[in-house]
Length: 331
Image (tube, rainbow, N blue to C red; front, side, top):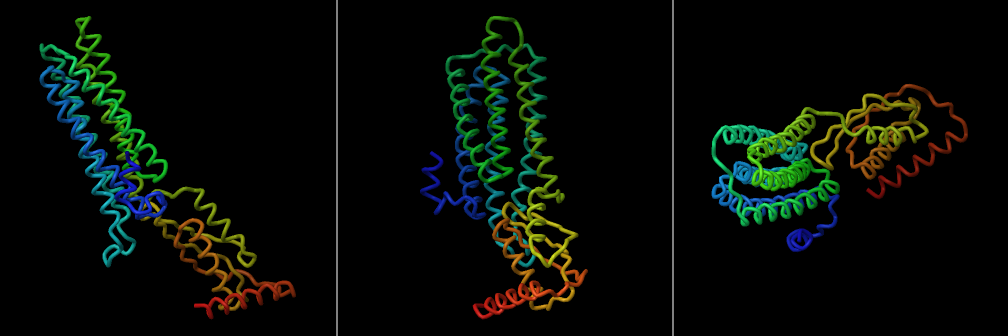
């Protein structure tokens, strides 16, 4: 179903490595999540109040929070699509993580409220009455959440989006929690135990935990946590692959949204190279890093040693000069 709508509303939707396409796919998954969860909210609240079930009512409000999560994911993806401007020269890519942070707070708040509601239900004398319709709605909810889970898991693996991760984790917990509600209803039917209220407490925990995880993950990103060390290692390998650079230091890489990396580094280069040749060497390194990693890297040259001008070295420098002249002529 998702691929069908993606093909209808997103041009070149399979090219998900493009930041713009990536955000479009996140937006579409959010819209689908909103619609599914709204339907589940309506059915669960109707059935929950008629059956006097705290667990189903809590599950219905949980789906309402899921709708808000999907809505916020939609807002986050739209915000991240805004281009760079005077006030935000690096774009708005971190808007995705900002919204993810707010989503985490919302999920934790809902989890805390559900916990309090379940305690009140446990202390009351009300009995839970499950009908065939209630069971049907719960099973339907599980099937819907299975679809949402696998859809967002697939998108998370492809797009590396915290928003999809949050929806995926929430759907997984909903599947487990709703299954627990069904089992609790069966047990409560034959034993005088308030299993429904207990399941409501468990559901509150299931809701709160992924919210906390998402909050910590998003906060770490916004506070400027280190990028993947493999990226740093690959940048170093590319820099040192040049015969005229013997070292580097002060490598700093910043991420301004998925697929938008900027950074700077100091490289140790021979002092007796001409500025023309040194510029060509650095430019080639920048291009290779941009093409392979997607990193916009500013390079500062530190002249730290002198080359011994052998015939082999002179020949190599001459080749670089010729390539540089050709580049400038083409430009």
